Length: 319
Image (cartoon, helix red, strand yellow):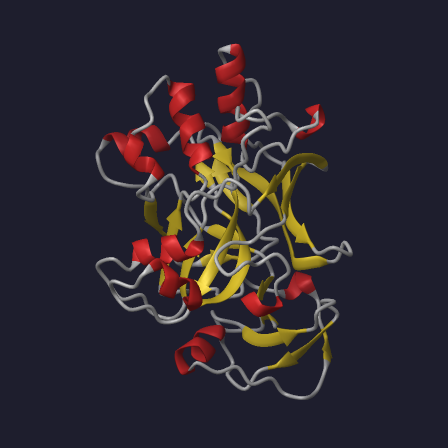
């Protein structure tokens, strides 16, 4: 089943069930996705209506909690290598995770920022959970995925070092993230193996291919692992959003990989390309986003049909 939230008045929009081809939709008895999750039901009406992806809010505009992991440890490894820092061994066995803003932007919303902040995108897979009990095992947690969607986790790279130097986590450097227009139940999702999503996560920057990483490859911690990690000391309410972190693939030789233009799978954020440039050439070349830059993030099924719709955002720097 595919669902979306139309931005029709009110902060939480109107929940609809969407046809597989993303052409029509049906209103749901429960007006919001959070209400449907709380009641553990989803009842669509029988009348079809035309569906317009551009009218969608985020599938869950306001969640109880957003926890973003770093499941693709290759990404973290590249960050450390570019800084000349040693990778702690525990990073391969204990997931990194931070708590972010649990209000989500629509797929076409403008990205806001200021010059000097180092605005970057991060293409991710995210899940919306059912209710999760404290201390759940990774095996059981994998069954708590209610919906899967795409996420653009905006990062302000030039603000991160100062924040992390304080010994706490991200606040200023992690503004609002945007979600794909459509979320999909795992049973209706091609490429879902029960714990991770296999398939190419496409990223274009200003119309040119930037990333073609496979989300099912090099994922050190799957969603069962991430949910269990998040629930170690707390219950998670239905409607918790958990992100995978930047999707990142190694090169065929186990190295950092190459840009799409050079025949590689490219990268799911600008920072990773800059890291590779630093590792290989001593300094980054690719700039962060500037006014008018456009990033598009999407996945396709085997027929070329959009699975989740697409995140399609441009950056507007404040004066």
